[in-house]
Length: 355
Image 1 (cartoon, rainbow, N blue to C red):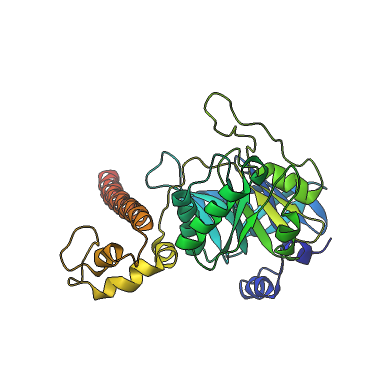
Image 2: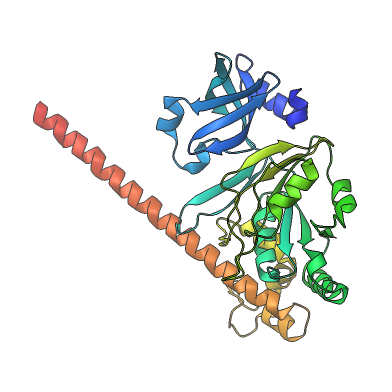
C-alpha cells in the first residue's frame, strides 16, 4: 500500500515540506477510540497516542486528531506510534456536540464528498437534509443525497420525494438505492473516485452500515433492525472508522446522529439557502433579520412564491440556532478571559507575598 491509496496528494506533500516535517513518518488516522488512535501508512497499522505537549497545548477538541487526519508521527516497535503534529486539514466536517451548547464535535476531516443518507420508508425529512447540506457546504465538502430502502415504498412515493428534493435543493446529485436488492448501487459506485475520501451522514437505522458493508464486500460494520417500539434506528456503529474500498475510494462511517446541531456555519447557510441571501440586500433595513420587519425583501419573496415557505421556516430556525451558538461561544470566551486576568493577578500577589 502507498500513501496515495489513503488519499495523500501533492497539496498535502507541499504542506508537509513547508512545515519541515520531513523528519517524521506520515500516517492517516483511520479509527478513534477515546483519545487512542489507529493510524495507517505504507508500513501497516499502528496504535497511537499524542504527545504530552499536544495534549497540554490543546485549546479545544479540534486540536486533537480525528478520523481522516494526516499526522506526523514516530513509530516504536511494530505496532505503536506517537503523534507529534496534525497536518493542517483541507476540510473538516463538524457539528454542535449533542447536549453541549458551545462545544464542537469533529465528525471527520480531509473529506472530498459526503453521502447524506435518508431512509425513504420512515426517516425522510427534508428539513434535516438541509441541515446536513449546511454542515457540508460550510466545510467545502460536496454533498450527494442517498435515498435508501426504496424497496419498502411504492415507486410513485419515491417520485414524490425526489420531486420535493429538487424543488428545494438544486445542483446536488440524488441517488436512490436498496440495500436488499442492490438496486441503484451501480449509480453510487460510479460516483466514487479512487483516492477521494467520502463520509456517510445520517440517522441511526437508515442503512449506512449496510451500505458500507455492501460497497466493501465485507462485514465491516454491525447492523441492526429498526426498533419496533418507536420505529427509530438502533445505534449500531459506535465509532468512526475509515475504510478503503476495492475501487480505491475511501469511506468513513460514523455513528448515526439523531441531533444535527449546526455550529459556526455562516458560509454553509449562505450556500444552502442561496435564494434567501440573494434577496437580502434588497431589504429596507441593513440589519433586517428577515423575520418580521416591514420592507423585508425576503419575506416578500416568500409571499410571492419565489422562496419556498417551508425552506424559509427551516432557515429561520437554523439562523437562530447559529446566533445562539455564537453568543454562547462569545460568553464562554469572555469568562475565560476574566478568569485568566484573575489568575494573573493572583500570581502577582503570590509573588509579592514571597518577596
